[in-house]
Image 1: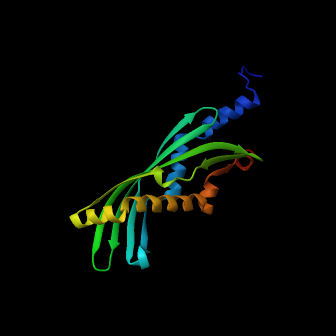
Image 2: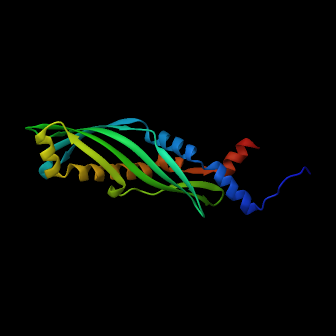
Image 3: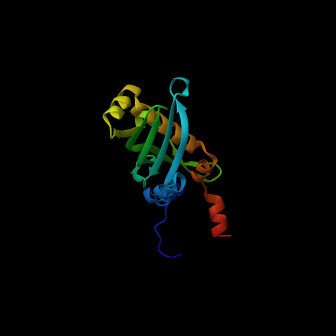
Length: 185
């Protein structure tokens, strides 16, 4: 046999993970799942649903940092911008929102031969937002109504639902045996 530096199966497995699960691949998977832009239809909010909230959300390219340790982990930042309309029936206020969703993920192995990128669900505290209004009245409303906190809670809930969605769950799992069978019959 040729001159090779042989590895143990454990060393091979670790090297395989380090080559297979890169920051670029994780970022590409998130870009596929999140898309670029979506609109949120008006949702009734507040006492008796008096306010209607609608939004146009633009999701930008995720930034992914990989950390190699006993586990291979990722810190994922997804920047976003939101044009938010708060319709109070008598008055409409527009808000501009920029923000960041901070996610964490861990590369894991599972039976029979699965590679899983396990994404932790964010809490509202993992979401940062900068909210501004073009009017003084909008700024007062923003503070009194706790708009910033509501936006963080809504984004966290939306992202949690997306993580649980079948398409997202499927994208987090790679069946290595199936991939090998198709590449090397």
